[in-house]
Amino acid sequence: MVPADSLSVVFSTFTLISLAELGDKSQLVCMTLAARHRHWPVILGAASAFVVLNSLAVLFGAGIAAWVPEQVVAGVVAVLFALFGIHALRSTEDADGEVVEERPGHGIFFTTLTLIFIAEFGDKTQIAVAGLAGSMASVPVWIGATAALVLVSALGVLAGRTLLQRLPIVWLHRLGGGIFLLFALLAAWRALSLA
Image 1 (cartoon, one colour):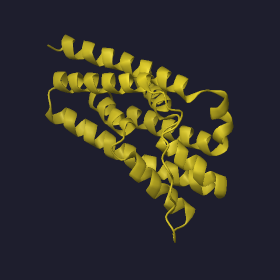
Image 2 (cartoon, rainbow, N blue to C red; image 1 turned 45 degrees about the vertical axis):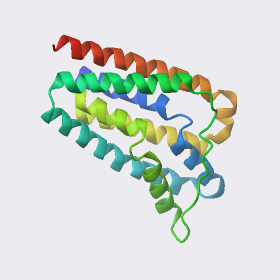
Image 3 (cartoon, rainbow, N blue to C red; image 1 turned 30 degrees about the vertical axis):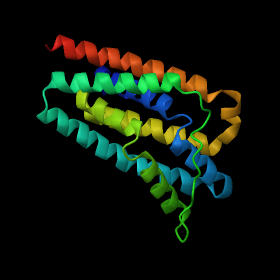
Image 4 (tube, rainbow, N blue to C red; image 1 turned 135 degrees about the vertical axis):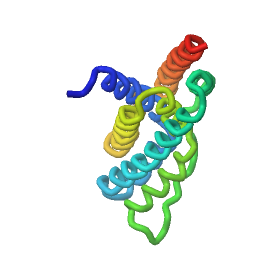
C-alpha cells in the first residue's frame, strides 16, 4: 500500500509539471515530429528522454538537499518557483516560436530522444523537478514529473493543434503560473518555519 504522503507528492508534482509543460518546447517537438512520422516512436523517444532528464534532476535535487541545509533549499526553491510563476503569468505568447529541426540519418525514436533532451536540459521543468526533489520525497517526485511529461508529450502527439486551438495557451500558462506561486509560498513558509 502506498502512503498518502507519497500520493500527495506524486499528485502535486504531476499537476505542477503538467501545467508548466503544456505548450512548451517539448510538446512542440512532439507535435511537429508526429505530423510527419508514426506516433509511437515519437512518444517512446520523448518518454525515454524524460526518464533520463528527471532521473538527473531528482539525483541533483536530492544530492543538493543532502549537503545544503533544508532551510536554504526551501528558500531557493521558493525564489525559483516565484520567478517561474511570474514568468508564466506574464506570458502572452501562444507558442515558443522555435523551429524544430530533425536530425538526419537517425531513426525517429533517436531523433525525438535527442531533440527532447537538448530542448529540456536545464529547462524550467527540470529545475522545478530538482527543486521538488530537494524538498520532498524523491521517488514520488520522479514518478509525478515523469508521468506528467510523458502525458503532455502524448497529448502533443495525439491531440496536436486541435486541443491547443480550443484552449488558449495563455490561460494554461496563467494557471501554471498560479500553481508555481502557490508552491513558492509553501516553500517560503517551510523555509521560515525552519528558522
